Length: 362
Image 1 (spheres, rainbow, N blue to C red):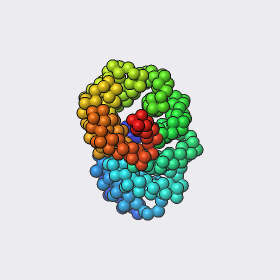
Image 2: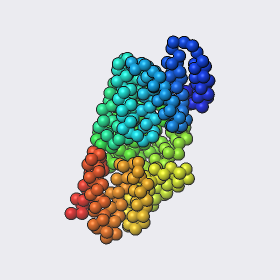
Image 3: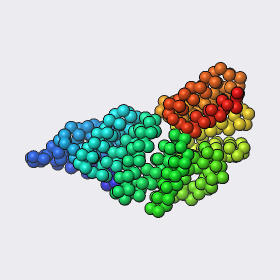
Image 4: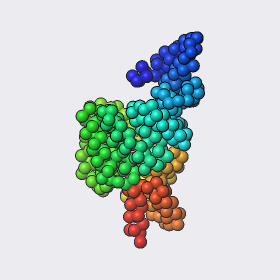
């Protein structure tokens, strides 16, 4: 039931099993209780009940022997996931490393792959993109040994996105193309859509607008299969960026407005703020810096708490708007702050964009 998207049903059965285990008079009763608690924690995590998940998983881990085991690995990997969801990246990295050591001590290739995948997510959330790449490449080696094409497709997409963040276009393109091929071989529509979206974004960033357009035209058929508002918002945003790059400002506005409307209707504040950055760029291209400044300020404020990379992209364009309005000192200061953050992150494409802007101003 846990693996068939029915965590609520699974939770009910697991809780009944836990009560039965506690009544046993067996030498292994503590381990049985701990095992039930670990699975209960996983079910709570799938339901988004993170506090309950944390309580169950920590209690389960405390009841297990200290030596490496499969159950211990399950607990450590689930705790890594909980802390990722809670935004506590440092705890996620600590539990992820414990999970990895546990899996290698057993040894268990499947658990090692899961631990590496979780570590990659934690590194990515910590904006340590190089660390994420290292963990993902190790996970790919194991996935190939196991022969799990679903995992291989997902890792290819994740690697492609991470290389894109780093500005390594060729590596990103190779991984995303591989992700598309693997997804199509195994009829993994969700991964095919994710890979196509990322490849379109990469092509926009590298100036291959014809390629980006071709990828975007492949998506409507996939969106009919996967009913996802988040994916629809990303596609509309990508169309807005393509139209803007082609100088089709009216078309860009239409797509950006549709994406913002869809995100606002569902209170998707992060995606809405990212599209508002694109809207700000469109307004700057249209010669409306005052409107651009207002919408980019909103985008920057919303993204700042938990989306440093995207917030910094908004900060750069906000600086551009201020410069266009004659607020030279404040605008350049924002741009230089953005440049410093991009350098710290290793965000290659963004750095190139800032440097091009500053070069054209000289």
